[in-house]
Length: 243
View 1 (cartoon, rainbow, N blue to C red):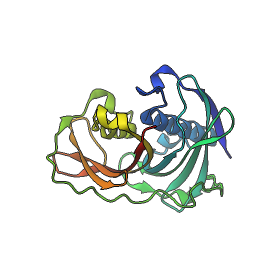
View 2: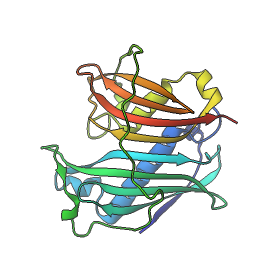
View 3: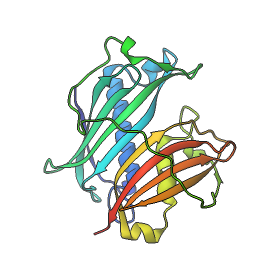
View 4: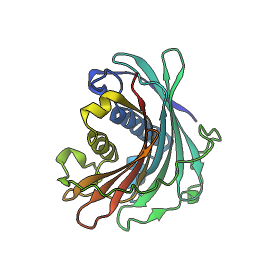
């Protein structure tokens, strides 16, 4: 039931420090999730036949070591089954020596294309299961950030819209990380993040980042839509001093 692909860190995967960027890490996991779903018969085209599509609802990632430029690594994923509504999927990255360098767990929903209603996954008798759980729990609900700082809104860009005509989930994370200046990134490295995807972003949206520093390297963030002041995602970020 485990699905594994082998990779090496290409020039367009790295950040300014020569390591796998957070967004590239996210996209690697997103891509292998899609590949494994196709192999199991639950991929994009399979669900589309039944007017459904997958939506990533929550993800929780712990980064122990980032692959450097040209370094080889593997990505593994497996389904942990469903509680009826959520489909659970875990991930692991290993370096060339087989050392565990990244762990993650995620929660997915199957949504009807027309009604936007959630499809119960326990109705699918052949939905895959696997008992192994990396964290012993699922990604949790993230609290909203509290801040009086003024919000600076900017328009949604062309490359931020995905094939479902919604704001790409990985682009949210990029927006949040880009809201920190170069000086902050020079001193701090992201080692853990937990994201809740709450609402669909659209091409015409104006968006802003809201942040709260909780101390000890923990920050709460959200992406806010100007039109209705609604949070589209919430994220908990954990930073450590860069070595």
